[in-house]
Length: 369
Ligand code: GUN
Ligand code: ZN
Image 1 (spheres, protein in one colour):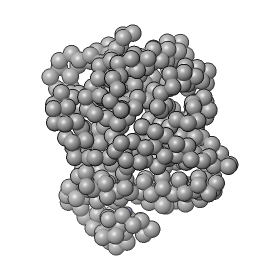
Image 2 (image 1 turned 45 degrees about the horizontal axis):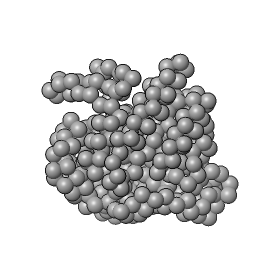
Image 3 (image 1 turned 135 degrees about the vertical axis):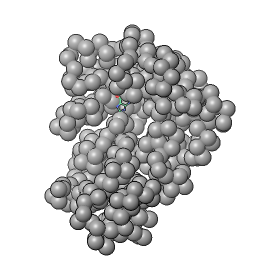
């Protein structure tokens, strides 16, 4: 994996870049839709491709429990198993395991119970790395502790130091398969811990770095601060990935501060609960106002859903509980995110990111209801 920093916007820290992998190029800033179990509810890989997605995210935790990385490896790797030939990034399980109720965290790893069988399972930096290597991910995330919010500084400090030590263990566990390991900066909402963690991790000269431990209930103002405290300490010539973020406004604020990659379940999860993104804010299609609304979801959108269907039809599909409601909504929502990212890249290319952000948010939040 290779990252080229093409240019920076003259008026903020926003960056235009290009990631090159053996499975294709990824222009940045980019949004990665989430296929947790190796499937993106409720789309086929052909439909995912039609949204314009260049890279997707899957989860170590879920695939380890079911069907197991051994089976995926036997099937020829995750790309072949799920029939997706573009890049895949896998998260390490650090986030999922730490949000479980019954877990035991030690200095070396985490014990937890299998959701279905109750069997005790153990994950640590070496095993999380090996699982992701067996899955065949193009980008592998380090095994980290995602610190909950709020968190006192003493805990945050010892946890962040552990995450730094675990990163070294992940790197030592990597065998050379052409896969790229990204470190994850923690440090909670403490400026000195974020800076310390970023500085320690950059010494390892990894192919990329993530900012973790955000979107845990801290809110947009603290998110902006955390990104602002972390990004300047990361190397310029490596991609920066903000994990689990977010809403369009969160992405815009973070691009302004120098983030290149994002992932979030919001576009697909919201699609299933009838919430669709438009230039003028989110709309809730089950609302009875849409029963006789014969306009597309967003008249300015050129996705498959908007070219062929009306709000009234989608309203009907949701009321009738038809599977097609989720498919058409997910196609639109992912297309909405990816179109925004393409516009962001064009704006940075022209040193107009701040103008673009202002215009987008004016229209989007001005009408939020
Ligand atoms: N997804 C969202 N936040 C995090 C994080 O802090 N760590 C990991 N591994 N995954 C995440
Ligand atoms: Zn659309």
